[in-house]
Image 1 (cartoon, rainbow, N blue to C red):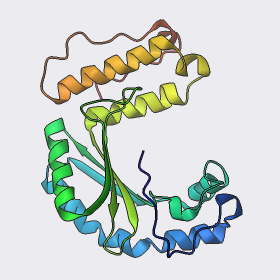
Image 2 (image 1 turned 90 degrees about the vertical axis):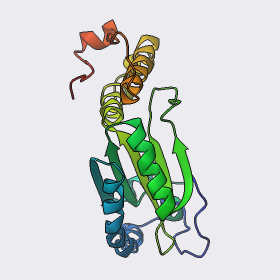
Image 3 (image 1 turned 90 degrees about the horizontal axis):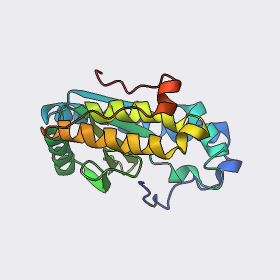
Image 4 (image 1 turned 60 degrees about the vertical axis):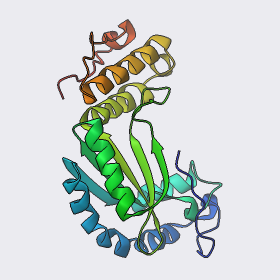
Length: 212
């Protein structure tokens, strides 16, 4: 994942368990100017091959709950996705073109590129951690449309599914096969025979949305 040490000269260093809702509100507010300044980034991304671009500031309540839960032992300063953005492309080629454009216009702290070699669960994408002009951190995900459909399906049907589904070897094998099938489509190769959902997914009517 993306995990770059934050600047040490910021006040938000207490553990999440001690963080107040006011701390969260003030922290997010500090990003508003940078968020507006990044509007020009949208034009650059679209010119480099993106068919869709969206960006958001993290929701105050969502971040507060995150600090009280998963990040209870970490500080607000460790949060890297207050500014979160996503670009979609029609092919791997365009996906890489967007990456090159961003690298030439932004200060990039870290690149996590799993497009050609998927993660164990089949996930593919490019994740960037960048610095805004004022030095704050933001995240950008670059995906093809097929990668976006894949991540949506696996998140809702598998990751959020029952343990019987999430830990099923046949489901994991199917997820990897779908990822490879879509990858071949994204690079213009014959993907071969379409993977078939294992019985446990069929029984719960969880079918991959091939036509989306």
